[in-house]
Length: 563
Image 1 (cartoon, rainbow, N blue to C red):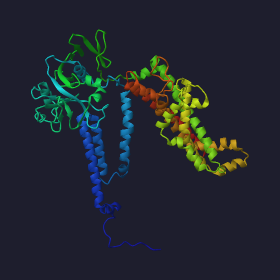
Image 2: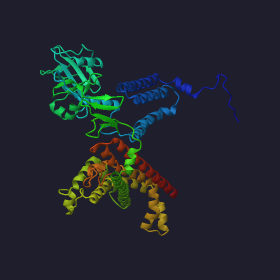
Image 3: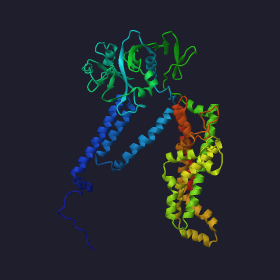
């Protein structure tokens, strides 16, 4: 028996296997690693700076935490598993956990149309919108602009202001001194003597004169970093321009548009009594704070235009389950929301399975061509097929009524509209079921079927007692996932029926609405969008889908006993 003899030339303690690896790490790998770390930290630092300027301190904290994690994990040779897990954890936090937390937080507020500001911002907005012009106050040249690269419809508005050489900028200079930004006072004067300013809802700043073009009428035609709107583009946002106000002083003074090309500095006609928490008009009418709005103290008249976001506790959830009108509509939607995914999954699975059984027969020729044709509906975008089916179901000129000779009001009758959705979803969904059942059938051993035949089982008995249980083991979890998907199949409902038809006198609750479509309408399409209430509906949807999916996966796990 041989024995290993230690080499006397080797002395010292045993070497760490990682030492040689570290010692032989190429220089370019180390340099590349640190360059990528530096770039990542630089991008995160820029994002943090933007968040600081916007006052979004929560985002600053999150970005700082991510930057610290990147530096700690990737700057050392430790934490090997985290080097692979960290990107996924960050994405999970940003795109999964944060939206859930934010939606849950919003569900306990009155956030929505007219309640998007803080109370302090609402007070400032009310005072700014009450600004009226002094008859003797000067007017200034004005152009409406959005940031360069932004769309006309959604870009943040700014007022580009000019003061002719012969006039005194007065209050504009005083307001700009409080918000020195793009240019120092003095750098905002053109060669022709025009003084330039830019106003936003945050305040007034001097506008650097370099690169600015002043038109013959004294207004700005072009400015670096801005897209100046022409008259037609500005008219698209006429109401926003009319309500726009640029604060220029602590006394509530603000710059307001007077015409399409002129602005003025005026004084507010509503003041805020902080001690009593009331707004008082110049005529002495008082408005008290109530439910996120300033309402008339005497109960006569409308509330003031700007409200604020405040915590309302469980009021949104109580509205869902206790308000008679809301509760009735919610219950109807919920019942259809259960029926739609159940019927969709059952119909698509049965059709897909039958076709898979048919094309799994070894005697059938040309199966590859047939299978390719059958998955075409699955390959087409739903945004195309949904609109095509909606047109086909049209009562007057739709293809379905034309071919069948029927006169069914597919999209105007509640039950016909529901049937139309199930038919459309059958067309869209059966190719998926066909694909997964085809794969599952091909994985079932033939000797199992042969053993059933030897025992005297016929084709139907073999299908029910042998093939189906083995098939459900493989596709059971996918059926649960398909149910969860169809439970929130917003796109199909929106494209084909838009949730309708609606009962007379009720434009909020549609007969084919799913809960997700209902939440969308509450948040964005109702007469008074209520994002807080829509968030509460979303939380209810989340809990329902979670509970149903849990039960479904428990049942599908039980099928594994078949094996």
